[in-house]
Length: 361
Image (cartoon, rainbow, N blue to C red; front, side, top):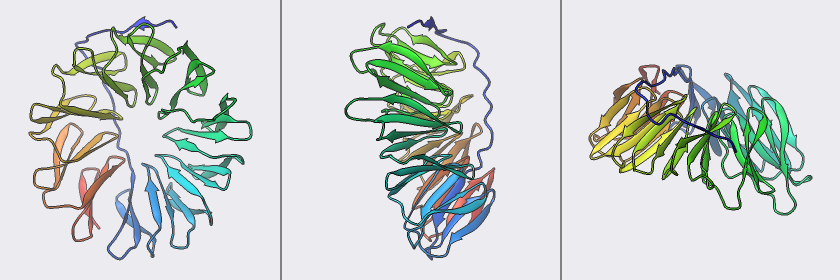
């Protein structure tokens, strides 16, 4: 495998542009009605309690009181199946199986993936699924079903699937699936530590002992030693290097977020949150923000938002480089969809923070 050497330190950092993620926020009110908050307004989907629901940024799937599976996306609802064995929802896909028939719904359209299915995974841009007739793994990407690999013996899904990337092993050879094509990585006898994100895959190379990435169709070393921990996001990777420094790489440049071993850290999409001494810090891809002087009891990272439980028992968030106090009283729970935060209050009402404004149900 041919790899270049990445720049180890940089002074300037790439300018990233983050848009407003609309998001669909589902909830049940005190009467058991199933509602959503979508594009600045509350809408009611069901007048009876639903049996289950799942949601991503742009799609909501739910089983109504009669057991029918329904979907809400692009501002419309649709009935999918009166009977189903299971379903999962990602930011853009609803995937379900009725018996051995596995189908996907996205952008207002449905497609049958296989009549011989079993297990499946859905992410932002991919659906990976088993075809038990051929004993093969296929991927649905960009409107096409693409064969990934077939095996003799036990059939297993890839262990890690990113938004639009997969690192998989076929007959002892490792490959990266990216933009509809498979790129040969290397042949290793032992397992490899890796993580897949959007447009990027990171791994500890067991041969050269470097920390490497796959980006833009090429492999390159990011650090001269294995990373202790790492996590891929949207065109970026966060990692703790051999010296314990917290590093962030994106668009060809690397930045040190902390020169001290973080007490804890988490990364997702564009964002990184970590503890340093008593401080709760956030990196939003552009700026380092000191979000709190304590470790929050709970936090959620999604897209360009880090929402966390504040010391008053309410919720604050980091968005657009600022810390915003959303609610200071006690809460039941909170979640993030798109760039919006939904807070469940003890009086069984809901508060939504959307596009800089607060909305009450």
